[in-house]
Length: 162
Image (cartoon, rainbow, N blue to C red; front, side, top):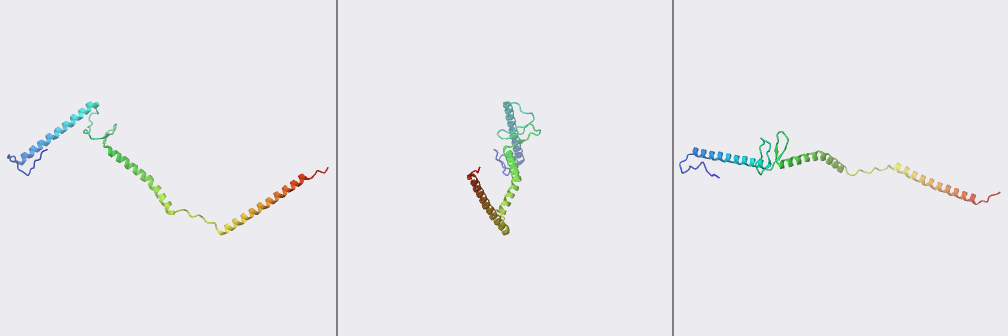
């Protein structure tokens, strides 16, 4: 690392412009060396994996990417971007579907339990009278059937007159 300050004049008599030119040259040289190192790493990886598609720039070693193959643009997508985008669209779908359902449930809760309908007093009196009538008819039918059984028994015990 270079720690040169332009505000301090060097002891060797170098001017600021000369110092700037030296720094610029060193930065260019370091940049060129880094590019060469990346290019060599890409060539080594391509040689190890087989030849990749020509003209496609490779990501630096150690940077995870998701590559969309077969697309004309062949975009590289970082893995977390894919996860976040999927989560976003799932959340939107849940909101679109869930919001009306939650509104309906909320309205039903606000209304409370339905109040049972009460039968008017007039109709209750009529129903009571109808039940008493049905009970009376049932008793009369029972008496009639008892009388019929008795008559059948008497006819069966009677001796035939010949």
